[in-house]
Length: 226
Image (cartoon, rainbow, N blue to C red; front, side, top):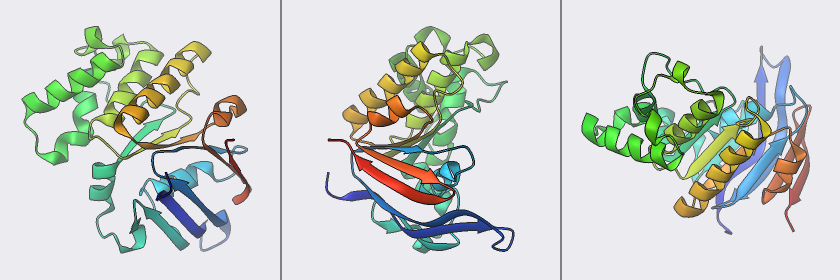
């Protein structure tokens, strides 16, 4: 686990012509096939950081590298994201008029797979997350926990090397949240993925190999699990 899957060097992200600095010189590395938790107060820059390492945004200055690729040198971030990164957010962001299996296939559309192949793969993932009997259900017919498990399946459809999650347990009860985290760990070990989780829960953060604490846009602590 010595090779860095994610590396940030002096990352700054500012808005409104530099008047607002969401991140202020953040530097760290996350080894391949390890887990990291990003913690800190609301508004501290956690989600901004996740967007940068998820290739959803670019830093104002400094560098972000993913799997050895400096994002500043990548011309097509969409393609990189689709090939290598899976996302799970606090709110599932499922399309309400599509059944679960079609929601799960959405990140795979650019890959050129047939509809039958996409459905086969999606249904297999939904079965793995305990939703075998819900594949044709619309999201409104599912519980909050079921929708979030479908979002986990969607994040895995392209076999990503990185799994990024922004408060994925924040909108579900404690037991369901534990089930979702267990799914992360199971899939991560099976597929040798690197995973990064934003959480306000210090107990959840303590389970990660690396904890990064962000306060007012600055990295104030890096703690590795003993």
